[in-house]
Length: 214
Image 1 (cartoon, rainbow, N blue to C red):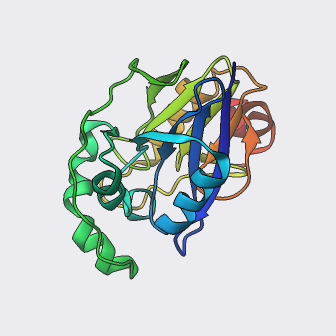
Image 2: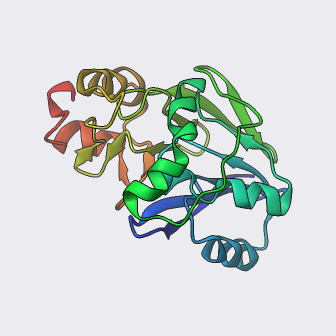
Image 3: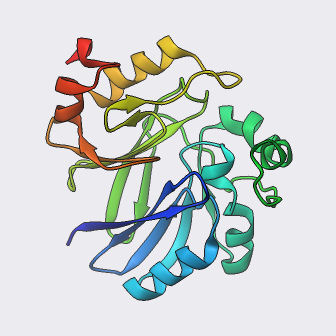
């Protein structure tokens, strides 16, 4: 019994939408369906899993743009992000216009997430960590058993999230990385919001933005 994942890049921003599933029950969640829903549907069909929920790391358009439509199509609960993201979700129409995205169906999460919450898919459980800085209500999803964390736009392979958007804060982001992510086991792999995967240990040693914490 294990947690499995598949990354499906979506939108012109090549955002790493992830399908996360329990290989015993074949129940799945989709993390950050930012758009290109046909790509996501095709991946789910190819995997032969049953989609049960949408999980969101934060409210930026490339991560949530397809959420309202997908939730309505399949009657799915929307889990996350943290309630501090209401600001960004309320701005979805403006975000669509600003970045040249198709109009996004507005939505409200079924459940807001808090630090220390647990989310489940099939027989797998993941812990919720609140990692603000890129956005105020950004959360990440950590599976200790799978040695995997889905980090959205907090940390990248060789980079960190932007903090020049409204309500972003550079020091807050660095603190979240140091206190929440760099305390995880070094062999923990992470799925970032963009670009290739890496491990916590690799970034502690080599990431030029945060290696002083390694």
